[in-house]
Amino acid sequence: MYQLNFNTPVKLHFTGIGGISMSGLAEIMISRGFTVTGSDTRPSEITGHLETLGAEIYYDQVYENVADDVAVLIYTAAVKQDNPELAAAREKNIPLLTRAEFLGQIMNNYPISIGVSGTHGKTTTTSMISQILLAADTDPTILVGGIMPVIKGNTRIGHSDYIITESCEYTNSFLSFPPKIGIILNVAADHLDFFKDLDDIRHSFKTYASLIPEDGTLIINSDIDNVEYFTKDLKCRVITVGSDPEKSDYSAVNITYDDYAHGSYDLIIHKEFQMHVTLAVTGQHNIYNSLASIATAQILGLRPDVILEGLSQYTGTDRRFQYKGKFQNVVIIDDYAHHPDEIRATIETAKHCPHKKMWIVFQPHTYSRTKALLEEFAQELSKADAVVLADIYAAREKNTHEISSMDLMEKIKNLGTETYYFPSFLEIENFLRKNCSSGDLLITMGAGDVVKIGDDLLEK
Image 1 (cartoon, rainbow, N blue to C red):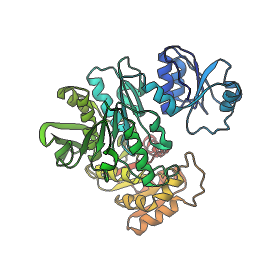
Image 2: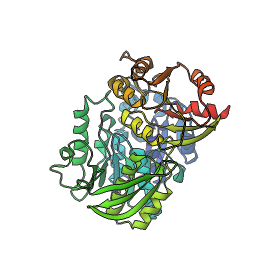
Image 3: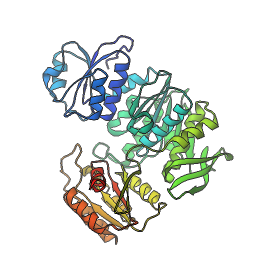
């Protein structure tokens, strides 16, 4: 693999520069004095921001975009191998690096690298730790997969030894960037368009854990099934977090919630009470995300008062149980949940919020995930009072799985839950205007563009 010399600025080209992760890498390199060009399918706020920083961006992907003086071309997993920009780089003998390979090289330039992995909770936990690092004035570099209000975006360029990033398992990307502190929040069946099955996923997370250096630390959720599979034979330090104080180094007891589902708990470390923690985010899942965050902060030697300050200041990222407003005195919440485990956590959180009837508007994400987890989706969604389904958001896929939202609707109905399907957002919005009542709770849910439904209801 080509190794970039980060001390010698050259010209870099990013194919797919507008992605939330790629844009962050581009911004880091601009801050280091590198010349950056890139391409994407259309302008966005992200590409506009990069242009203000000096990046030259093309809104098509053609051979001519790759200049002869480009030193390296970086591309995302979504880019096809016959892409004309990749073809240009090969013809001109310009080295190619995937986004994951390039991120790994960036991380190697920071003595203290923190990688947050897991099927769910990566964005939230990365943001939570980042908020603590900011409260401690550590000046970290941050790469997060969502919009974090305190940094007004998804990237922060620091000037210290610290870098924190999400470590995504899809296409085994996280195997390209071993961290000094690695976190495994959970391991569940997902991305089954890439992984063969749950055992295949577990093997990848085990490999990720093995990449942590001997002087590094793995923080792992002890509630993961057969957690010893991931930790045995590791040379690095291992810290466990979880629900059981008897088998977890860090745990939470005496958990309570306020009227907005914000959690509070007593922190137990090695079976001893340490301090009382109050969060400004919702749900039980965020309590366990906070345990991993506290463990990380303590490894770094941060003071308890600074940790509590950072946690109290963290109010969430966009699309994570985000309050959007009210229409017809109906509260609208938007959430990124697109896996059955995430749906379960969101609905459990919503139960702590005052409401008469809980409506879920769900947009399934990818045909392969919907097909593979159809029964699990139905089981979790049936826990709402009423469900409205949109068409499946295809993302990177074509429908070769013979699956539709109609199939999911029948499964949920068979479990006794009021369920509807409409093929367009406009039909869904009209239905909700007629059927939601004052005091109801409406959650738009999914990793696609379902957020538009709530936005439209609030505008009209």
